[in-house]
Length: 525
Image (tube, rainbow, N blue to C red):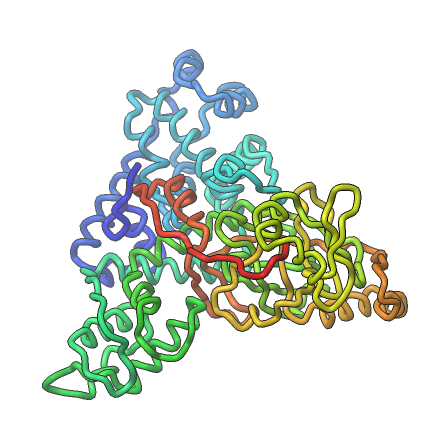
């Protein structure tokens, strides 16, 4: 089902379930809210006394629904006592960036009490499935996806919940309950409301706009900033008459927006900032829906001690015993050499590592540089492979964080430290270069109780392996909307174009967003 987001039932019911006051939305959204609510209420009209076993068996075609009724000896589940909870859960699907209409379509089409009974159970299991582990399967969307997935007994859970008269509560409980998911849901509702009431306009290209400049586009810029919550209703209007001067309030609001999207926060409106300004409330609500879906893919009990790398934001977060301990920027894979979404623990530190150059990098990036390149970069040939020996210019720097996976992906230091100063850091061949990696390695070694071994290994100047007493889980995630430890929602551009795959799986109109264009200048993993 393709969705025009601003006017769809998902936006309308999101507003209704969040505010409980249809009058707060626009008239157009009000009509959509009322129509969507009526659809759901009508779909839940049940007649359990008219549902016979034979008719119900004929009506059931889905295997999970069949198992559900077999567990009940083919007794109907939905009555005036149990159906309202399911109705409420269907209405609340909008809070999760899902379209309630997608879950009730089969119920609307059902003819007769038995068919409606079976269709309601199908809708309940379908929504439960979407909240439990996502509307889409990431393994169908991405070549590599190894992050652990949730595992729920949906049929057994629904059977028990119906018996207890709490089907709606149970379905809602399947969604992530952490603070980050809740914050994204709340932000989604805000942007859905803005999208339902905004017309939107595209700001044209032109010269750079700096504080104090006058430009006819300033009025549009102020309108976009205001509609996305960066300006109050009265701000940015200090120049009566022209309303074309780019004043300090507007520049400060642009800086806040630039920080949200991870671009240079200088308050100057240039091509990159214009691209973000033209990302309106409708697009941001779509972005939030996509990223809530990504979180539904993740197992609920994440490790208390772990390293999370947000590939889209090119940032690393380290958590120790459930507390956020450290953050640093990283360099990740460029388009064409994407860093995959995977879970892979660090099991040892490698001091003064050697780098065995993959054949593809050797052929494409080293051979064209001539025979003297190996000698100049402390490289030798061993058993047919190019190997870079330990040293200050080694592409892995002075420490490598060995990880267990079959894709040769790991964290490491780098000699190209200048890349950490860039806003756009998708510049590697897929591995993750860590800002001040020696400091990070010392932190991990200290907390693992192997500081002595690691310091001795570093001082040796030779490649030396230091095993960690316990593996440290690492999750390589791709989140273009996320929540800072401070609780603020941040956005990033979509460097790999992966958002579009998820959005289309959620029912959005297919499109092809431009991907990041970069070129690796430094040879390295």
